[in-house]
Length: 111
Image (cartoon, rainbow, N blue to C red):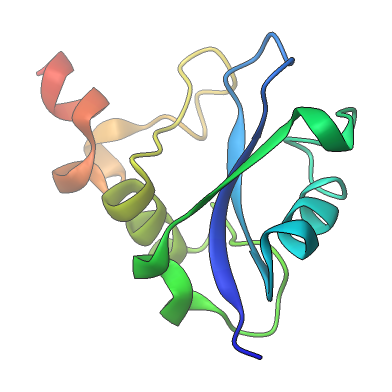
């Protein structure tokens, strides 16, 4: 079965933190999500997994896309509408240097 990309988030978390994981089914994606920083403290029933078929081609044998990987970041920003958080760490939010800035609504809105 083909691995599919899902944008996942813990709906009960006070943080607006999400990630992209891969799974053959939505249930397997939620299981993978529970092992990520974004959802590790969540409950199965609180994890929302939304298909992002445009990211299926980014599967490279890893269960989660890597924000630090330039190609992954561009895909996550472009197709999953993700952005870095100003509150997290300046090293993650150097918008003028970000490889995904042309697709980032946060960057274009702040200019």
